[in-house]
Amino acid sequence: MERTGAQSGADARATRRIVTVPSVAFFWGDDDLAAGRAIDHFADAVAADAGGPLERLTIRGDRNQAASLIGQINERVATQSMFGGGTLAVVMNVGALTVKNEDRAALLALLPLIAPGNALVFLEASPTGAKEPGQKRVVDAVKAAGGEIRAFRSPKAGELAGWIEAEARQRDMKLGAGAARELALRIGGFVIDNDAERRNQTRMAALELDKLALYRGGAPVSVDDVRDLVAEAVPGSVWALTDAVGQRDAVKASALLERLAPSTPEPVLLAVFHRRIRELLEIGDLLASGTREETLPKSLGLHPFRVQQLATQARRWTVAELQAALEDLLQLDAAVKGAPGSPSRESQRRLGFTLWITDRVAPARR
Image (cartoon, rainbow, N blue to C red; front, top):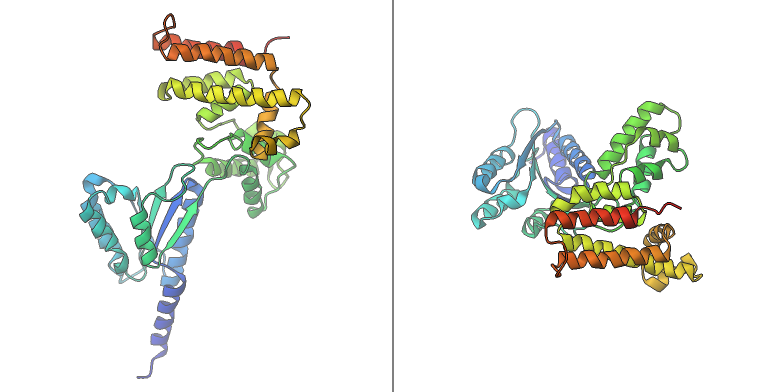
């Protein structure tokens, strides 16, 4: 049978949809801004392919309402829109919808039923440092349905400045020398180690770029502009606290301790403080003996960026000061473990941590 032009066009659109635009995707990671932008691009691609804008339906999984929510998703994405654009369902916290076997089976059975013009995105907010998505069965089902799997990881320590420079270039925004690094520094982009919560760092950076662009117009943004307009917002992390200790910033360390102490076990605080002081003592000894800093990454088996940060911190201390700080940590450790004669009340031990920062971390007045 001869095909009409309309039929040929419809077939071409259907073929293009199958080949280039999946109807389902699984996005995961700890970079909320990148994931949100990816959802927008995914929606635009589906809308362009379907010939009309999509209505967005956002659902957050709740194990107590799993069956009802899955039914709502099914109603919206398994039915083709007769007039106008289709529906993009964005499902967050999908793990809550897969606790029961029957709920998981019902959810995954939806994937082959997504009607043309509709789409479904699962969005998993993974912890910083996660190596793979948590919902493996959902990911496997999305793959089997021809869907898209993408990870969106936030920039690690030291990488945020490069992200800021690339973002500025995309906006045709001019940054002066050092401006990107200063912005990254002020929003926590150089906190060492992996437990810092970085989920919103790129969003924070993007918002600060908006503010700086408005302030400077088309002129280059300088380091001083960043310092004048961007408040410091280091992530609430025990590693941010230990960085403040290493930098001998007693004011910041005290503020972070006050914020973190109620939710962080005392042995954890002791362990990270002890580790950092030991690292600084080791590097301080090596530097004092004449060892060149550029040889330390190989001899210590550490990343060059980490060695650079630790060496910078070690130079703020004398070896004797680090030894004294370590000795006082041993006394705090005895108190935490309930050694005879040590402070037994939590308030006394908390005061001990505060005094350690005041007496040992704050630089001695020369």
